[in-house]
Image 1 (cartoon, rainbow, N blue to C red):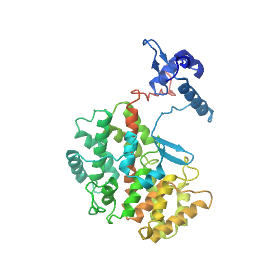
Image 2: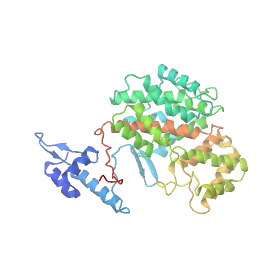
Image 3: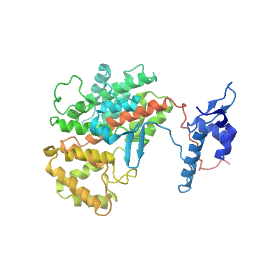
Image 4: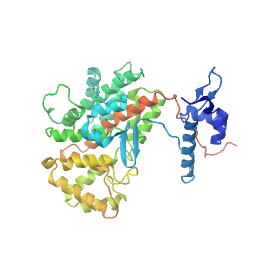
Length: 410
């Protein structure tokens, strides 16, 4: 608890930040600062540590090329630090090697590393499956996933209940529907006695006709874990904006999926999949890599601004594939090595997760859009985790002011 002598008034905060008191109120409404009522309910006070944090962020942002400061969003979920990725302080690479996707969802949604149960509501599942049967033949699996939240919402009259337990229950049911409504490519082969298959086990026959293997399920489970959240990616921010308006969890996922559908976000993995496919067909990974440089000026699947020393998510999946033995077919293994060698000729060229996912897909004969499906199912957990955080913040705090540059009225 902040000592009374250390508490700052609105005027003191304005002086420290070099702004008007009205701007301090705007910071509060946008969630950049928290105000506290003084004893007796007259006036507000502020924590000097939070004020200093905002001041430091503002100085750093304005010093970056003179650009105005961008708002930050306080979160307890995901940290990208020194080349590592952490969920609530837990190393994601370690979680991927020892935990289930269900347990990591529990960590993100509740703060406890205990497995959640994902069960599809029969009415929602039946409704989504009927729509799936009516979709055109050229529709992709991600197309079905994008409309599933809206359909499932229509079957949930209590969707506007934003109590945390209610949100978690609705979201768990939605995620199960998203998986189980996908068309099945193979008989669901369980690994030993299993009364409640994991999300990875349920997702496997939707992506490939190959029988599930223990190593394959382990790799798919790891992929779901490492992709569950990645701080404020654009789709996550879109979801938080919807949650700020108190949209229900189905609408939050829909908003996030809208942003994910952009060619600069969700489609990145598709470019990498085609790169691996072309290299396999031609037998010349270097030529396939060079062609991308010639036609696109860059190669998807290599490099990541947040990870100059290499994407830890890719390292997790590549290690699992390298350890898969005969399950990692020699042609795919050779192409993976050839593309990585080509990328390293002119620089570090370190692979990112968009490169690792197509290798997983090719290793197990998964559908071309399998990587995008895995990404959506995994990240839906992160979107809901951010929504749960956002519901605790002031509503409608993302209110930006436009800088008008058009014709002035006469």
